[in-house]
Length: 145
Image (cartoon, rainbow, N blue to C red; front, side, top):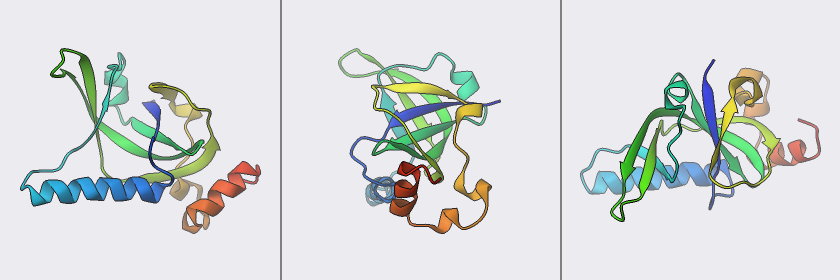
């Protein structure tokens, strides 16, 4: 069973904001003639990286709800210019919306075991994936999803 990470998506108000940020970074790299690789830098290196790379994902908490995920492709520890150890999480740039679920604020990242991870919206079936994100968010807040 894969192990996942969960992290706050600071600065994004919606999945659409996150997708726009990824596309903006991709376009910037394209203009500079560079290959694009989406990474997210963290302070701590996950000790269970091998488990994370066995089909794990990074689940994003947006405005107090787990909203989406991105597949984890690699975990790369490095030392920054100030000599501080950091870690780059290499992510698949494709965003996968998940069933919205409330989640309290926290610092850094946390492990998320597979049995506690929300299902992908597409896996649930029906028209939920076609519903506007804001409506899904409100229904989840009311306990109707």
